[in-house]
Image (tube, rainbow, N blue to C red):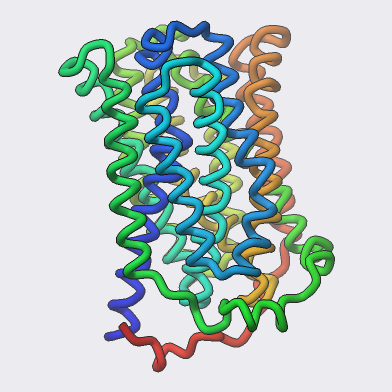
Length: 404
């Protein structure tokens, strides 16, 4: 009972942190952008550079985040990351120029890098036999955060016309500050992740980076990052251009957010029962298939089917890949392994919009971009078959010893 209570408390704080650093710091920008663009009087090109800046900060620091967690401990690293994100929110609230905004958007990316990968590693270090469940509950925070952002930001702009976007960033900062306090009070490093033991027991980084199964999962994560961002950026425009009413298109996006809240935890539990490899193959195959639907059925029923199927697997695929990246290393090595895999994901996200835009402009429109996504995900589907069954390492945190 004590172990179960701790699991739910820790997964709850993980959910809140994920909502702050992924939904608010990374994904809310698309919702805030229309109002922020007018408020700062910037061009669409400049707005695009701001979004890329956050991805760049994340990409450059994600590897170092795992190393920092291994050296200093997960709690210190996570608290530092969320604190940086909080400062970024505060800066955006009062920012008055493009270049100041640029710096604080960069800070959001850096803060996210130092938070999310150590967070996942910290959770599964406490409950290594519940990786899928813990990661699934945590990733549901992203869906909750996106749903909240989609409702909150437009409402604030109607109440505070012209500066509602600043109020939104300010509220994000307030929530982030509260989460920092909660994390400081609640979080404890697992016994195996104390700094002194890390210094003694962590295998060389080179051995982890050359682990063939870790590399396969990392490549699959990079594929997911690339296809996910292409879909996120262009699906709304694709639906509208295909004749779907803008209101219905928005509702489909909302349904996607709602279903993703439950998708991650469900697939996480399934993988803990059925096995990671089989679950990974299933979700990769179904996700690849879902990308083909809007290519052949460019009508509202086709897009509805596409969004429903994708919503039921995509967040699950995230959960399974994240869990799998740590299945082939010892618990003490998990932060570095997960950071390494996440670097591939960050590269994929960095390249995705450019590749997708080029395909749309030069090679047949939206269908070519979604065909590319399906083919690349198909490669990931085949790659999933080559991943071996997860290795079993001794649980460093005996469940009987877990205490609140």
